[in-house]
Image 1: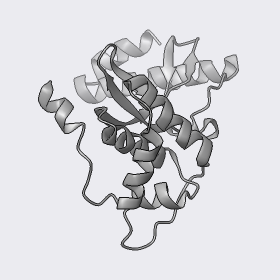
Image 2: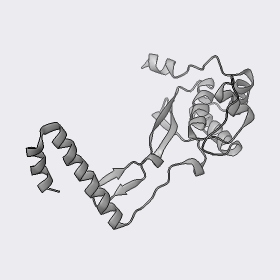
Image 3: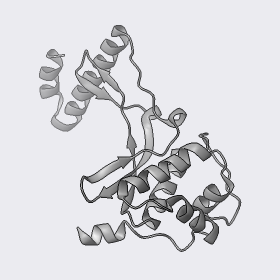
Image 4: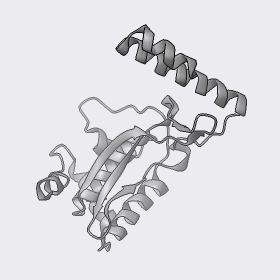
Length: 184
């Protein structure tokens, strides 16, 4: 575990001195992990705006450009910046990408993750709580929770179960899949 935490403190050499200075000034006066997380997320949420897509000048380090020029950007920039800033403050941090599924299909009894739920965030090591989630993306850039109607849920459940039967047919053959299809 010590090797993992040490690796989660590494900062790339490409980070500009200006971006490094910005990060260190944000962390000034923050002593605990919780205070450092609050300082970093507060800085990013208060000084930056969310927008899909970003143009980085040729040859520029993307995170250095983001931290110093403050262009609107998407969640990957907020998460990368938060991780690097926390690492500079001595907080082991890791960049995470995945899906923040906010839709539960009540008819089928499962969570739904759609392309619109793709997201990036940070996990930071807190010596008292272990890995904690750090969300530095402004609210308008977060995946939205949605509640489809019952007809949409039933249709989604039918497609989900039909997909499972098709996968079973590919893996096990048509005989077993036919039996499973009867249970749809």
